[in-house]
Length: 627
Image (cartoon, rainbow, N blue to C red):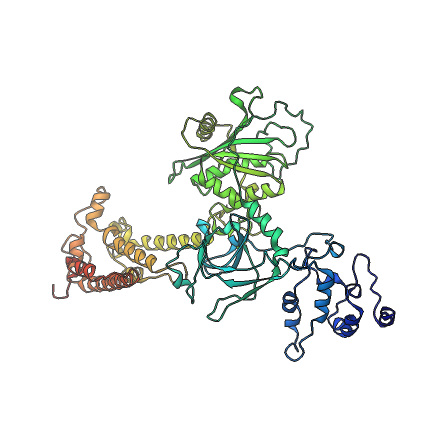
């Protein structure tokens, strides 16, 4: 009768697949809290169930997600009798809010909780991370020190009881010390509060955890996430295990039967029709490729990068189990790592979709690159451009995900009399001069991104910041060396052109590129040292030119300032007419050098005075206007 009375003023809640709240509560409490439930727009039990569908949302989670955001939360604290009544009716006692089977409501589609990979973080942007330990238990912490290139991150350990209460939102508290602690003496440099417990984790096996706290302060004792462990458990475990690549070092033989060619062949994602195709195996078979790369004549116009891959099928009647092979070359940005990555790209480009592939290589850089592909590092806009050969690796990553490959990188020892590795090495060496070597088309492996940096019709695959810095420095040096002072033959035509541009020389010695945040103090020291060496050793004084270009050197060329002495380094220092400028240049360099030594001494906690005394005693500083 009570249900009949209040249902007249309550909306019709007969929605298929959803349980109305009045079926989960006692009639008395439901009538008492009816206005509160309507105000909160709570009508179904599914509104109070975690995305996993197996646990009731805790009161803390509901408070954090809804009540804490109300404007009048301070003056009207909502009662929670209705919540306690629902919990008593729907959850199993002492089960951490797990629902009875009759109330479990699995979603039609799995919850889409996308957490950002931890590998996207930088040393400047520190986040809360979640990963797993060796027992697949969750580990939480705040980033302290990040080394992306080494895949290392030191975090401040925070603990949670999420395993005992998976339905509750994750509440973190500082760890006071545990067995996972790894000493980190420099922790005080990165944190305002000295952490009690720190340890190392892998960036490739961690995810960024959303929380309500961006910075740990003196009074921070609790940090709350917007998710429960029941929400994140599957996401974190699948991501952690997906990156846990365990190569198959066994050489178990393939099946003797070879496919007749009727198997489905996924069309290649790029036009590489000239490449040999691997021998097709039955569905579910394991493909094995030995790959190798070679770089020759680096630093000369004849530089070349060769590559090769060899498909191995045991016990199938092939000579030495070599089923087929391919070799070729790749252009631009020469490096040994690029040469090792090229055959991986070539092999994956002609492989069938949904294949399991083992890549045998003697290059650790190639194996590390394949592991980064598993974390989508090369298509992430914040990270990919910081990696050399990122366009080539992004194409490899695209093949792995688009063709649904299962890749197992296997490290083999180079020059260890492994027949297949030696065979791949010989193919690579022959690719440099072979007429049938296949040149990988640049347009295919540089088409993964809509925006590309090109210079002189070459797509940039190096760190753009480093590339622009080198270009600027090279342009500056070109302008310096293009002065007529550095072009010896001009003096033979016009004596007035044979002068030193002291303004540009002064600017060169005092120039500090502060536009780049990566230009740190130790870089500045090397920068000034190089410029001073250039000034003293590389200026084309006549004595030096006589050694390098005896065909152009004549005895008539003398000091332009006094015109009575041959221009050598000693005369340039002692010349009475340019002594003042030389004294100023050496004095400014001495002051800067001594300043850097004092600063370095403070950072290293070392007394720099003995070094300064040794440098001060050198005769090169004893230049006075009275000399």
